[in-house]
Length: 205
Length: 162
Image (cartoon, rainbow over all chains, first blue to last red; front, top):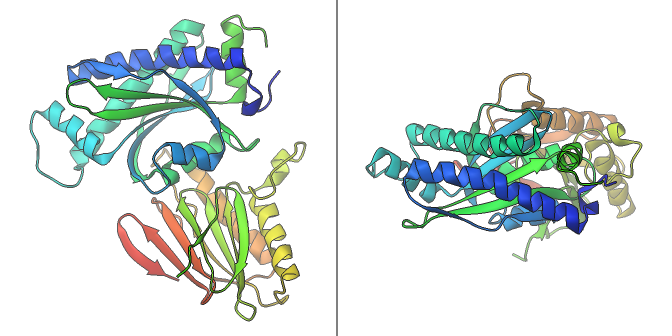
């Protein structure tokens, strides 16, 4: 039985990777529909890292990032973050709106568009896990912020890093096939939630 | 200027002027600068959570919590020659990064961190000379041990000195 993220064994990590694959696969399909183009998804990686390494892996503490955060609760507790850089956020909204507004900064309208996309993707992710496990999972309204990625990541780090010195997240990268737009989806879950999901999927823990 | 000494999340370090300490991208965490201007010994603590007592049944990282990290850092500073009544503090961080519904524990953590840091400093009778806390943006915090000046860099504001 594991009590800390760094006690997860290979079989359990494989299962988490598969969960990420199913959740993010569903989210990628949703993103492809929104963008009306094929979206490639990386093989999910399960990262079990120190706090600073987690921030480093997402581009370095001070890198400017747009983040949409959605909490999930009910039978499973965790957080999903949809991350992208400002240029890609602008481009995605240009595609959706059908024109480039020529603005350097992300307009309020574009920010709220990105928030809604993050919301749809996170809901797709959670729905897939819910369907897979039979767990009832509710998602919060989406929250959006644009800041240094280290500051944004302080939120999940504080939430999931209270016990132990390691963070666990499942990460997938999305890339639009024709326009090279990159985004990133990461899922955090409480230790107990990981246990519940694994038990539901028949893994002895 | 020599290379700054970087302090990671839930860590602290101490050094002596003219060194510069830095911690990057504080969000809801709080960075606590402690300084003795006579010896020019100072420390910076990147605090993640307010209170370790909720986790007292486990082995904890004392550098993560306000109530343990500040006490340990002050002890180390005193061993490094800081006078008992000379240590002063400047603090930054404790932002609410995402605008969440009122009452959500997610929104309150930055504020709880600030409150707890102030309580601990107050108990230790360490005066807070300056603070740049709360609001909704990330901060990189530099602490110049030659002067005791805290510099805060954030995205939409010019660098401010405290």
